[in-house]
Structures are given as structure tokens and as C-alpha cells.
Length: 354
Image (tube, rainbow, N blue to C red):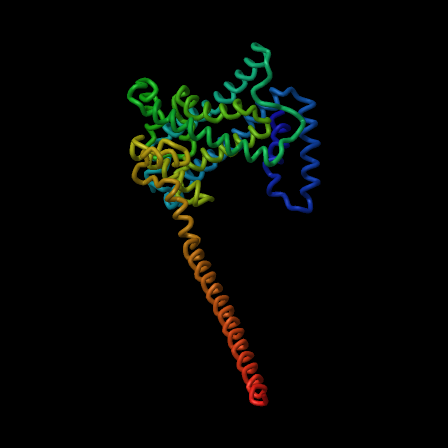
């Protein structure tokens, strides 16, 4: 069943990459497949099995591939790891790496189980509508973009607040101790470390910030699955420890801040994006804030130089226009002076004749 459910979900995620001649046909195929899926399975199965497939593919499988690369080709991995040789997972021992993988996978399954329990609580106990909407109708692209931006914003605020004021607060003795003895026992992060934590800490810092926006806006299940896929990829890439990532302006900056959070033993860089750390003054050395990342990307692509060239070109065009305008005005003044002279010459003989 999970493979059948994952088919329309993966085709939905792939829609933006489809070529234009076949887009209409692929969208029609997706709609027919999605409608058949919704009509032939219960809403709970569509939501839960879809979430499980998304987490398995985009987080667990991606993390396994990264771990396999680090283990099989350590000499190559060292060259792309931000912390070099110390960031190779095998250096901490095979038993430690196996424990991290096992706990991280358990926490992912725990999150799906909590999602299932929440839906059953709503529908079977309280007899209200489900938290996630499962319908045959498809959400609009604008609705997807708007809700995803809102969800990422809420998730960022919740994660920052919980991470800083609960998991790294002396007042929450047990939670902070669990977080430090579990996740921060790993000195250099790799992909599975994203969900390697005490289960209660994982639920508070990662599962709640991700699931809460979906409940607040009552996401369509496709929106929630897309949101889960993006969050899963973000977790795997940002905690990978790699200094070379697909997006320089976003992912690389997030990865640097995550590395700095671990090397500073949790003294700062509590947020996902870095903006709240920048505003709150909790950015630590080695973790450049989001403003610096944008500045680096602008410098890389020569935005300032291009803007300066554009301004100079604009000034040149204005000066040329002024010169042409000035030349035209001078020509008009000269023409008028010539006309006046001609009129005076013509008037003089008339006066002499009188």
C-alpha cells in the first residue's frame, strides 16, 4: 500500500520539473491517480502511509546515502566536510554510529505514530474533523506557496523558542540534560544527528514545530506531505556536515550555523534559518547569520558591481539626453536669433524709403 500511495505523492513533487509538452498529460495522470487513491483508501491511511513514505525516502534514505558515502569513501568525505576528519561518523566508533541511526529512525517512526494517534483522537474520540484534510480536490499553487511560507515561519519561531528556552535552559533540568547527553554527545553532526535526541526532546523541538502549523491551517494532505518532504531534505542536508551543498545562499549558511552550534556546545545558533539568532544576538562564531549569507551570495554573483554599472550606464544615458536636449535648445535659440536678425534687415529698407 505504501508504494501505491507514494506514487502520486512523488509525481506531485515532480510536477515543477516536468517539461511543458507533457505537463498537461502528467497533471491529468496525477489527478486521476490521486482521485483513485482517495476514493479507494481511508483518509487516515492516505495521510499516515504517505507521511511514512515521505519521511523514509527524503530523510532516512538520504541520511543512509550520506552515511554510506562517509563510511565507504572517508578520504573523499574529509574534503567536503566542514570539520574535516573529525566529522567522519566512524571516528566515534561503529557502535555509536549504529546507536545514532537506530534512535534517529525510532524518533521518525515515533513522530508518524503521534500523528496517527492525534488523528484518531480527533475523529474517533472527540468525533470532530481530522487535523489534516484529505480530499480529491487539489490545492492551488498560490495556496500551496502561501501556506508553506506561513508554516516555515511558524516552525522557525517554535523551534527557536523551544530549542533555546527549554532544551538549553538551566531551569528545565531534565530536558536540557537529556538534550546535552544525547544529541550533543555527537561533536560533529551528520545527517542522522538531526533526529538523534531523547524522544521527548525530539518531539518538542522537531515534531511539534512541524506538525503544529499543519493543524493550525488544517493543511490539505498534499500540502502537508510537500511540507514534510522539504523539512526532511532540510534536516538531512543541514545536519550533513558538508561544506558543499546545492544552495549557497540558504543551505550552506544553515549548515555552517548548525556546525557552530555543536562546536560551541550549544551556546548559540538555536534557530533554523539564523534570522532569530541575528535579531536576538545569539549568533555564535563560525555561524554567519542570514544577512551575511545574502551578502556573500550577492558578492559572489557581483550584484554590487552590476548595480554600480547599471547606475553608471543610467547616468551616462541621462547625460547624453541632456546634451542632446541642450543641443536642440541651442539650435532653437540660434534659429530664433537668425530669424530676428532677418526681420531687422527686412525692416530697415522700409524705413529708409519712407
